[in-house]
Image (cartoon, rainbow, N blue to C red; front, side, top):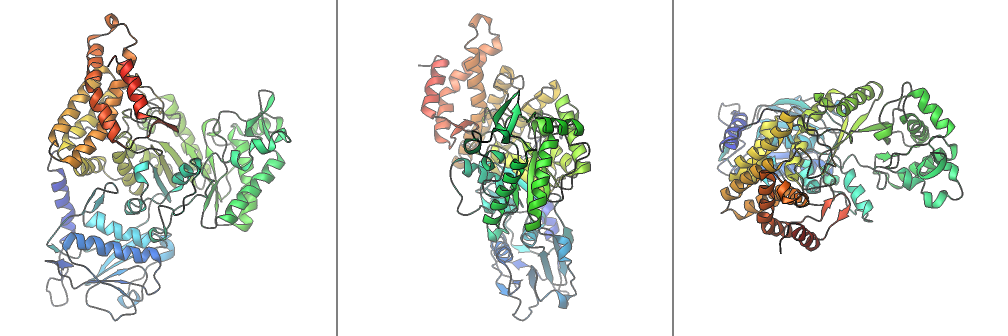
Length: 631
């Protein structure tokens, strides 16, 4: 969390100037003459890849070629390492060129995503582990040394320059997290994910699964180096699919949880030997049918019931947590499948009643624990000590970190009952990611608004999360400022003031905000929303003559319009004589903004106002108009 940041219109220009200082360090040839990478649309450089380079290395070369051409107008040819050496080359990936230059790269130590960048005389080497390291190295050069940014699939910043010198580099990078996924609709673009070095696409499969669609091609394909891929149908809450009650409950009620004295089909008995056998067979079948997938979830159904049979209860009591029976099942399954698939992962959730780690049981080496923070306050950093729920989560996080080889996080970033409602969490996303990193988590899944476009400031959140997952130390003000400037143009100043307004309110008053709070929750007040509306008026006015940016501002403004309208709807139930002056003013504002709000909503791609529930825009308009007394 940072102090409020006052942004000036020169922010991007100043930052870009600092970035490009790195790129203009002159590289001289043996005769002492400048040897620019490109100048006035011309270049003496070429890109070299191995003759047998895989698809992600070839794509890395193409991406480098494409963006350097956009930057300088010069198109560097791509050649194989079977051609003779040239005076000026960028060596991308493993190639025969490395040994003659005396370049030793420990590819095994780089893993699947680490890379090195090294300037050697007039040459630049970008080489990484397979399958994604070299590609990430190219993006590292373009972003961290040449100033490129990819804010959304449609909005980027590629600096233009007449002359580009070869930067002097000697860098080695291995990502903090092995698994990085931002689960928002606006993130479902393989090129954007790869450019921001996200490697998870499992959540998208879960969405398509629930819609009855099997994705023919993953967003992160072979050219992107693939992904940390969950088996289709094996992303989360999978026990209900592996042991469907409709198939087994009537004949074998003992497979299912004993809950309040009765067998309940909504959860299973994790210590039942037949349940263990069926789950093992189900996971094995998934692994055999989907050899390209690496992670298969064996996780509890999404309800608060757990088995209370004698064996499950005794195990839970001895280990001090209801997680014990779940981990018993998962470990038994993982032990068997490891014999056939030693490199695949069995994942499970530490979620709700099963969140606390057992006293003595330990996950097997091929088990990932995905720890969920669904109960927490998301208006303050998890480690801020703001309330007991956050403190309890941090306690569990640190306890799991001591006993778990592979700990992943499931974090939440939106309001799932009101997708449009303002969520004051933009200034703490980085704090939470740093907490996860410091607690030795090796993967983070950030669940946002995944089943509809155009929710509350979703493009900003997706970008911020992407930056922090790759680099937990990425500066918050820098990330926020560069996005707002590129995406909202002249409206960026008003946008930043709005963001600070809603965050300052909850921080100064110690207001806690969960992921299901209503529009009448104290994090929003009539006074706050009136002030927010003024800032959005200022934002619209500043880009009135820029149609594309104006459309972005108006679609983003739906968040505050929704909050105003829904609070006004609630206030209409209060007799007018009992409303405060601020409440009466808010109702008036809701009526005044109604037509414009409905226009913006009609023009948006929004299909849902809450999780998994479609809504009809015409029906919503008619009901809201009636409740606000608008004819």
